[in-house]
Image 1 (cartoon, rainbow, N blue to C red):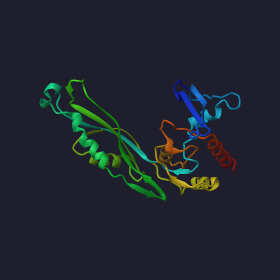
Image 2: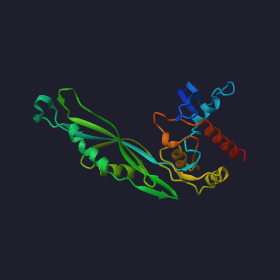
Image 3: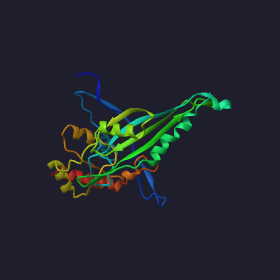
Length: 265
């Protein structure tokens, strides 16, 4: 046994909103705050505490049993690719701007291509995957009196699982043809896989509807290993990463009950 952790959790936080936010009566339950631990190969860790202390929430978060799907089964997942697109110019003093070429101004062409981009809707086994190509970060500039010679725009491409990573990268390069582009990260999507007996059985026993997963999840990892997997959990995925993101407690209870009934056979 070595000391390299096979699982490491640092400052895990999970908050749930209770009550009606629209009516102003909502409250935030701090189910887990700042939990950290690591487990090395061959080690076991027991979580001990009173009822309601957050033990189950820690476990659910770690193994991703609480992927938000509004209580529906979401099949497969999108692939994701991040890239940096660069516009180059010539640096100069802003008092003599005609001697330079403003790279930030030059980035307007990159943004125009994003504005004009028309993503695909792809139907796979009844699940409609909506693609998206968006700027998520922009950086440029040297100082308040300097014409910048480079501007970088980070873009994120969420692609349907009928494309692989190479095809996704080729598509993004085609969109930004003529600009310098560097792919910085990518991960494959996963097909719905609903024909697998285990997945079909889960859908039937939970009595849920099936829609496409908008986002990347660990279903991709399981799919690559040939292991049937679907996304299922409480919470509205349309609230993901918003400032007012929350999960209703009764939805957590209902989803947990469905999982327990399924596992109990």
